Length: 479
Image (cartoon, rainbow, N blue to C red; front, side):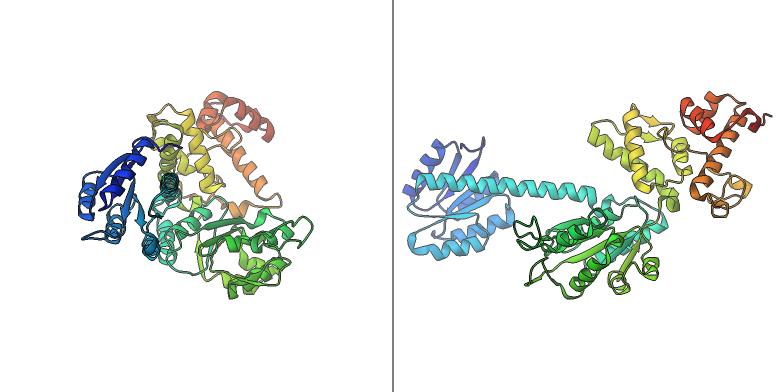
């Protein structure tokens, strides 16, 4: 395979015959070759222009090839170094490999071996660049700077993440669905000393008990029907890194026992195995359940709970930090504009107020999806109005503080919790929605088109809701 266009190789050897032979072979193969006969000259050329590969002899008068390798590793880490040595100096080549050389060649050098080795060095270089790019992308998505929020409750979360990240302490992240628990787990991992090691994610609620045990701890060949080969579990895959156990409250009792053992001893046996497997894994767990209640109810082991609850982090719901909603919304608009190749719009004060008026039962995830939809529907510029999907509840204006009712109060002045009866939350929401629709119709003189616009929904959707809730003209009191 010919090298990529303009692949530049710097050859450094004090033997003119070696330099000449390498120049001929590499040039014929399509490489752009530069020659130097000592380390000082090679360093001067490296200062003047970048090279993809340095091919250097180990033993040279003055500064050696090892000295040159050290300089290149320090100042030009993207340049791959291949060392050349004689048959009697293989130990030098081994030392060079330990010092960071990509590979080595034994003189006299065969042309085919030379070209194959350079091709391999360039492939490794391309792979290293790809890994660096992927790490940058991961950091951009999950890094600490990607956590958005200026409210006091979120600042406390950031301080906790900052404090615990660079330790091996177990972390238990608690919060409602959609609050960003996995994002916090990624931020903890990528700010820790384990950042270059794997982060392995397991959704404990997505697997039945028999599969979850095998998924976590692995299994031996023949352990059960279908186990045709030995399988490494997630603990082994995460060795040296972090294991994120999402929905930890879903783990059945039998697996809880095994999990507690590995957390306490750092060792386990695969399903169907006898040999103990030792691992170095930091565990971060997350749940949307109240584990203390689960412990009291007997569905979650108290010893496992206390082992996991070394460093708890509670993520607030979005309705607890409504002042962060415009910041998050603008953040999502920026992200999705880059993804979809569109100009990033800005939010008007009216749109921001509309977003802050909503209770966000789906939390940050719900806002994220709404902002992607909003971006797609917008033409850029300023977003003056936010339209919720037709199957969502209507957005309402923020409560009037002068009336003495807070954001936790319903239209009749009583708290939401006070209104919950045998019908539960659905009945409460129906009553709340009915009151809002009737109020909008009264304000707009019974004109449904205007009432629909005020509520932020389509007219057909308003008609559907009027029919579903049984609203009649007798319910609407006109001024």
